[in-house]
Length: 429
Image (cartoon, rainbow, N blue to C red):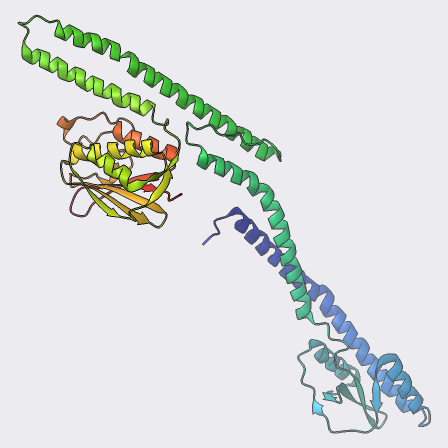
């Protein structure tokens, strides 16, 4: 799976790139530098061994000890005319194989490298003698594995430091934008983001500030317009009610009743419209004991609602109690209107907060409509009784209040029929 954060993704990308560069560098170093140097070094060492053997043979017996001392002091070579029984060399150093190959080329016969006395010995036949010339086993060991580890380790450290520096410069403004976006609920005042840094991030911050300002103005204008229209329409409604009261006594009572019913529906629609317009306004967040608040709310309902409490009795949360009351009232009213009796409010602890579930046994909500029912003026005509009416704003107010408070509202179908509206409150005390 791909890493979720920008830091990990950038670090992974840079790390893979650095690994590829390191592999190419090591391959090129081995192909064009290390291998040619090792071959040349082995050839030079083979030439030195053969030349040393030739010189030793040509010298007089009296001069040979001085020559042996010179070879040891200058080149670290030990010449022994006495042939000893030594073990074949067991080494995985590639340079030793190259040396044996170069000796075979110069001498025209196979050469076996031996080991003993912490030295590597080469048996070189020369002028009727079989000389054993020894040298240090690690004098030509370049340790390519150590070089590769150094390259990988240093490369990884450089890439990590560079990626942290680069990504932090990018992610800090992005984190600020993400945090501001989470805090912005449409109506709350939001501190503008600082428009500093690289030009791309300045453009992002300026665009976000402009968007927040325009959305806030749009919501404010919408709220003012909707509230004004709803408020102003109450005056002609009052006049119409007065006109109905002043009708002659001989007027058809059914006609008067129909007009009164229509006026009542219009008045109810204006009430929920005003409530929707004031959806983002609420009281300050305070610490609330949840069970007494919900018990008082349920006692005010026209229909009996069963409370299934599965949380600690003294559970306390920091929230807007007025907003929570309006949300639960609308959910219970919606369930009562469309589902009839057998209402239940279940309260229980969840992994990321406190879950409040309004449960009914009504006709339920189709899966395709479960996300659209929170839209303003959206009604399920095919699955709801049309005579029950409804403004289509009750659940829209619920969604608006939940978004403003940072709560999560969802709906699901129940096994056996009915719907469950789930309200998740973050457990912040």
